[in-house]
Every structure is written in structure tokens, then in C-alpha cells.
Image 1 (cartoon, rainbow, N blue to C red):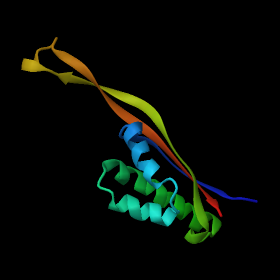
Image 2 (image 1 turned 90 degrees about the vertical axis):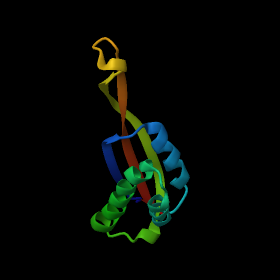
Image 3 (image 1 turned 30 degrees about the vertical axis):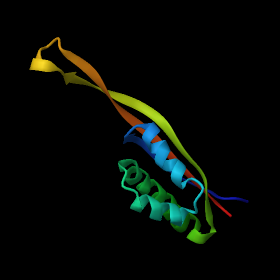
Length: 115
């Protein structure tokens, strides 16, 4: 029987494309090394992914009594969430000189499994 440990973060600020770029750099690493690398990366996306990895490690320890050395990353999935639509005023603040800015949200799913 294989245990799969899941951690999710929904509706996080940041585009899925930028989060996927950081997730690809830690996907093949052991979970402890992935956390260490995320702490060292200067990208804002790394600061968004870090708590999800820590939550997955905490779930493995508290819910299944597993040691971190026995775990591997099964998958890291980054999905697109909804978008906030915000008005962006252009020159002179005129009512008709405005556009719409889309603020992107993402859903993060981290799955760990026992070696």
C-alpha cells in the first residue's frame, strides 16, 4: 500500500506560467532539497511554492508518521485560477481612457509518495 500525501493551495496570487517555471526546477529533487532550493531562489513564485511543500512535509510527518528521507515528489501541478479584472486608468485619468488589467491567480497541488 502506497501512501500519497497531498498539499494544496488555491487562489494564490501569481501567474501559473511563472509558478510552473520555478516548479520545474525542483520537480525531480527530494523534498528536503526542494525546500532548501526554494528558500534560496530569489523569485516571488518560490516564496509562494515554499509553504505548500512545507505543508506536504508536515502532513507526512503528522498524519502518517513518515520521515522526510523516505519521501519523493510524485507530482507538482500548477493550474490556472480565475482572474481579477481591475480597471487601469491611462493618461489624464479620463473616464474613457482606461483599460482592464487581469490579475492572475493559480492553484497549486503537491503530491508526495513513499519510496
